[in-house]
Image 1 (cartoon, protein in one colour):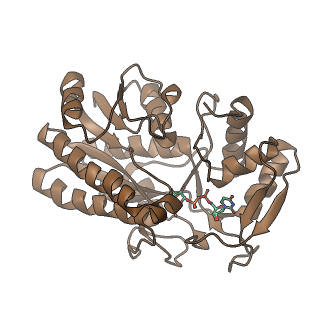
Image 2 (tube, rainbow, N blue to C red; image 1 turned 30 degrees about the horizontal axis):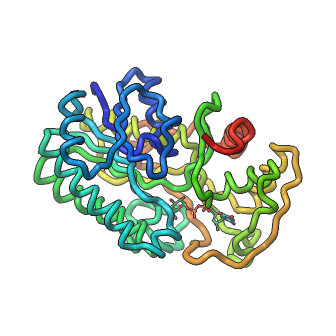
Amino acid sequence: MKSVLVTGGAGYIGSHTVLELKNRNITAVVLDNLSTGHREAVHTPHFYEGDISDCGLVKSIIRKHNIDAVIHFAAKSLVSESIEKPELYFRENTIKSCSFFETIIQEGVKHIVFSSTAAVYGITGDKPIRETAPLEPVNPYGESKLMIEKYLHWVGKRHNVKWAALRYFNAAGAALDGIIGEDHNPESHLIPLILQTALGRREKISIFGDDYPTPDGTCIRDYIHVLDLAAAHLSALGALYEDRLVQNVYNVGTGAGHSVKEMIETSETITERNIPKQTDKRRAGDPPVLVADSRALQEHTGWKPKYSDLQTIIQSAWAWHTTHPSGF
Ligand code: UFG
């Protein structure tokens, strides 16, 4: 592996993956249109501001940097926005990814890791969810990603491209040295909202429903540290190069679920602050429980989560938020 093109490398998961590549002495080349990402998050000298649909730019990057592997993160990723603006999601995530993959495959790229999501499953009721669970997305975001998994299945077969799609559960936490972290605008994710409330930047945290069929009535999610997610991409890529992958699609999570109330309580303990909270009505489209079975990824690549205990997740996120209260 010489140089890896990382699209969306200025985003939350992409920027942590760029750092992980750097730690392993692999050159990362970032292409990001900065529509949601942050230039300050990019820790590689090889940065291109531009769109994945700009075929000329993509070709020139691949030739200049001798790219033969791509990690494709660039996408819109808000479930609620996707319900409001489905056209935007199919254009940005599906149509543009097809055109991007067509270009890189024409240029001879043979290794692809694609950023997929647990949203491809919809409401399964399975605990934990295996990759073989029914694929029934309940929002355009999940559907827009699932279409690309299917595209890769057929196109990869035809052009002999090795690919893996990683279906993430809930990415969380920040780099342990505090140099990068999570910064969305507007913020909609649970942990940043809890910690911004602890910092006094928000009045209270809303608990979206406490009448779910779970032990404390609040939703359960599988929070995976962003550093473990970043490492999962490199494990998948390494296995693609060595032809060790047994399947194309892998869940990435920890197998452990935590409720919204548990996240707030643990945050109160770690921050040593009282966090004002209020129960609100359920948020549309939230499944009660989403927990990953990611044994396949572990067995086929040797990947294992190292930082995904709640303490490390919340402590690292807290360090990021206290030092960057307004984000980047
Ligand atoms: N929640 C609250 N209050 C808030 C924000 C969130 O109670 O103010 C709850 C949600 O209802 C949910 C949990 O906290 O139960 C986590 O919510 P997030 O918005 O942080 O994350 P999601 O589980 O909704 O979304 C994640 C990823 C998406 C992905 C989705 C798949 O961020 O990209 O999982 O279901 F599509």
